[in-house]
Length: 150
Image (cartoon, rainbow, N blue to C red; front, side, top):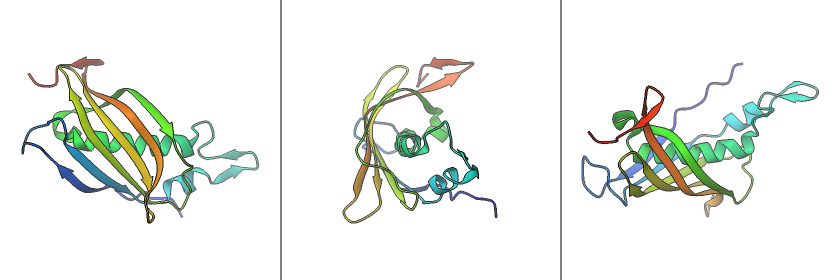
């Protein structure tokens, strides 16, 4: 049977000022288990679906970036392209892990928003998988970063 991913669940978004992006805004998301297990499926004796992409690294980092996009209300504002990031992997992601991702806005510039983000395995207590001290998001039009607020 084909793998069908579950949609990301937005747990909370806390705004300092309703209807406006502000430093200190936070978001928590939940990513259901299954995608890593799917990408680890063997399609040939020496090849897995996720070969070449290192999903145990890329998925938790991407999930933390997703929380940064959510806190920036990326679907409405268009702020959803990751221009740069710094990441530290703290522990491995397991195929059965549900992941909680978190992000907080640290800086809002003319063309970018900088967030701090984390990804945790959802267990008691939460187990830190990835810490992203810096996620820089931009809004892109015609292949270029554009001012966020005209």
